[in-house]
Image 1 (tube, one colour):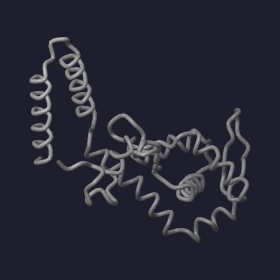
Image 2 (spheres, rainbow, N blue to C red):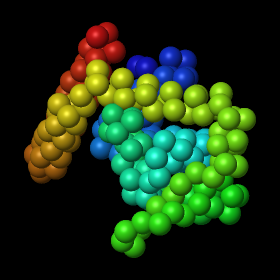
Image 3 (cartoon, one colour):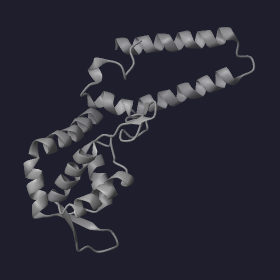
Amino acid sequence: MRHFHCGREEHGNPFFQAMRHGGFFGGRPEGGPRGRGERRRMFDAGELRLVLLKLIEEQPRHGYDLIREIETLSGGAYAPSPGVVYPTLTLLLDMGLSEEQASEGPRKLMGITEAGRQHLAERLDEVEVAMSRLTALARLSERTDAAPVRRAMHNLRTALQDRLSHEGATRETQLEVARILDEAAGKIERL
């Protein structure tokens, strides 16, 4: 049986990357577990810095606005955590690439500096790659509505727990459940 994490087709495919990191099925791609304690983020720190800088170049934004804009650009498939965004915004300030602007309310409004514009211009290819990753996820999200799959997976989990937790669950019942699951997996692979 083929698994999402071992096929060559996953390399560069945002669907497989999101699946591997928990996206589409209730988690967030950014921090999902990969096994053996590894964690992989949607963007590395440098890429996220460029995405945030690109977005504040378009218009000054608060941290929360940046998180929501990235989620919108990805079609809802990815939203970076505040624990990643806010330290990156502080770094942009420290690097002189952004600056706080006057705003109403307690939230810091971030704008780009001339040095920030120059930084983006020098890394235009990297910015385009990072932004295209978001748009690829959005296109995929439009084609892939995972809600019915999540519902079905929840139903399966509930049915398995109910059936196998009964005192009368025999070894034969366990083997029959395994056969049915293997058959379903095979049918899904052939789709």
